[in-house]
Length: 466
Image (cartoon, rainbow, N blue to C red):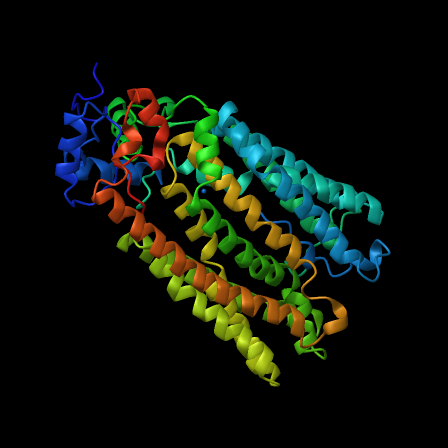
């Protein structure tokens, strides 16, 4: 079948706004190029039913173990070293893991990573020395590395781009912080084993979708792979490199780096920060004080990405979130009131937490086809988690209780995130206009339909989603 044939659900398309989108399509067709799929041919009601039908990990919580350092004889900067080991392997394994997800299939790869992470998390319950903790955390980082980008990559095959423990009774000789890891590991391992048997790689092999729903789901994804006639193409070196070296990928990657300095720093050091603010409180009282900022941050983390989904404008959600973190860290640095500083933690979590979903979502939405998308998400999360490594050294004990260097670094990061969002919005808007004017049409000259499909987000018919 000719790739110029306009068959419902069988063509690659762009998400081009109707500029002259119709004129662009006619021009491409006249020149013998692959014609974008007509989105008007998709039934909105059927799409809504499909999305409802299709509508799910754990971050290692060393900070919850109040006795961990004492039990393992840790002192000085040992805690920071243990955290750094995790992020070293985490960073290195990001892109390779997502490439393996593409090769093996995310429906098998993600459960395997989850089971391995769960088993290693349980093993943490039996560590007896600082050295064994380092070894387990290094392996944990390697296996967790693929989960966030892998999940984002997996969901990109089904969805279009616009859419805590205070006291527990011991179990045998497992108690205190060890019990947290043991329970976390059991749950994770169990879920991973279950997922191995029920998670499918892509819509066309999903047993829980009808034949018509499979065709519709595949057509929805093909509709955003400009110039392609398939939703999931064979792995190609060109598409991997296109995903890694996209300008949009690197703008998002550096945003995610600065976000992770804040998110991972706050996540790990929140109990330390609260203890420094309220040194006379009991351990339980301070643990309870760490909960409200997370609750508020979680609420905003749901609200802002939802707003971005409804308005199809992720950059605007980023512009709304970043100032909250800027104000929060400014209050940390400028105020001498511990209550004000505690209040600032609410602003920090609200301003930083939403970027996890926003950055990976934007990376997925603005890379095509499937292989480029896997590489782009992996790159964003890999570079982003360098921020996690940096965060392990931002709140060191010698700077308590004000932690001026850490708060200054985070304030700078929040400002840079705001500026990078502006640069990304400007670039995407400008590039879309260039394509509207036909100034990227030359990329198709002399290419076969297969070569045109490999262009992905470089295809003249593709439009960036900001």
